[in-house]
Image (cartoon, rainbow, N blue to C red; front, top):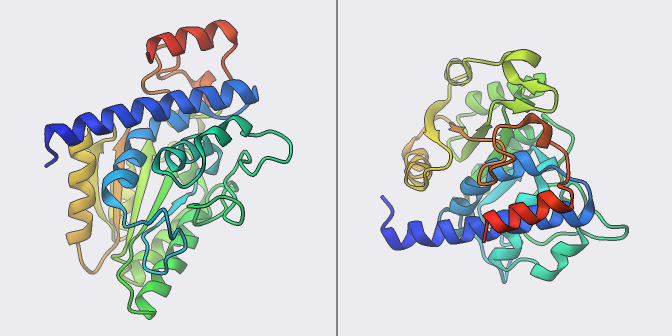
Length: 273
């Protein structure tokens, strides 16, 4: 259980991160704000509380790893990395610009704190498995966190990776499904119904935890419970709101991959003040 001061810190950080996300996408005139905003609170708890990471040694062999499998939501990851001190905050203004190292999808060779280049959907859990297996072989205690979109899990490779993850008893893997119920073409039920997501992961041998993905206590407690689970991987199904924190974006599929115009930007910044 978090204390009130920690919750207040998370609220302040999440607001700053959301401002960064909107500013990045607005300045670039492109990007994916909806899914970036829905995963903001989970990333905040991971980077400011849960993960064992070192800004001064981002390649520490014993660090916890994070794979943003839904790599198009890089604005959220870049913003968190900037707030945490891995990259200069002023560099966020270069997002998606020509020659910028902050590309539309994160590049592990160019961005400090990025553990895996991602963007081609469905591949993140396979990579997480490899990292987790390596950790066990090397007798290291790090954990691997992998964020998947609920639309992304329509990819068949996700389930091959889930089967492998369970088979090898990778209890150092924690999958987080950003269950905002919307993808680029509509709701997940309309496009390719993957429900019930929890029962599917259970059937693949996962320890499954369902939470409100915007409740900091629930997020923190889920990560703590995942660490206690031995002999099987954990899947946290985080129920979220696409566009969370921005009134005109919340639960609107059109904001999957669209930048706000001038008037919308002014209103959003006013709302986040």
